[in-house]
Length: 88
Image (cartoon, rainbow, N blue to C red; front, side, top):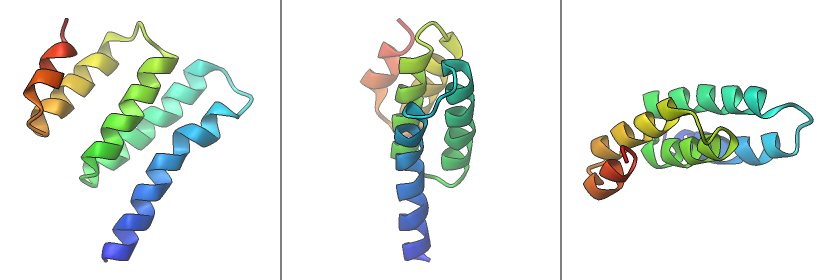
């Protein structure tokens, strides 16, 4: 079970790197990353989820929903100062 979790975690970490080299627009890339964000959250991979959210924000820096979701995630992770930064 632990090996499965470790392998899944590595997959989530590699998704953005693969997408950055793909020949698709940022809207498509961020959509795929967002699906990975949801999956990583549901599996409890919060640090990978935060990393994916940051990469999605880099692709769509004007998307307030991404910042809000990252702020909520930081609250769940009890990183309160990082959470409050997402709402400024």
